[in-house]
Length: 115
Image (tube, rainbow, N blue to C red):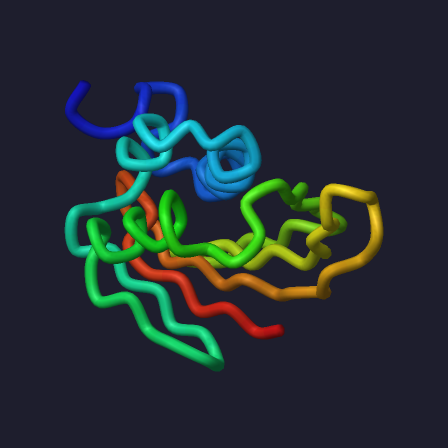
């Protein structure tokens, strides 16, 4: 498939929710579809300059693979969406809280994560 399903294209809140679902379920094919090839993520400890670097980290190098993203609030604005939530460890304990700010075109094009 070339890009996200038609029902997700350009829908920031739906793309953001699919982003977390795909990571939590380790559905790397679905994650690839919703990320633009030039997707980049900035976070406090590192930056991923493109989709493949980000996917490689998520699939192979992420310190804790068995986690669950809990979305508490989704905020929409022109060209993007912000998500406030928290990440749970496998045992259900809190790993950390986050705010993710996504830029959206047909796909997710940029993500800035604030821990």
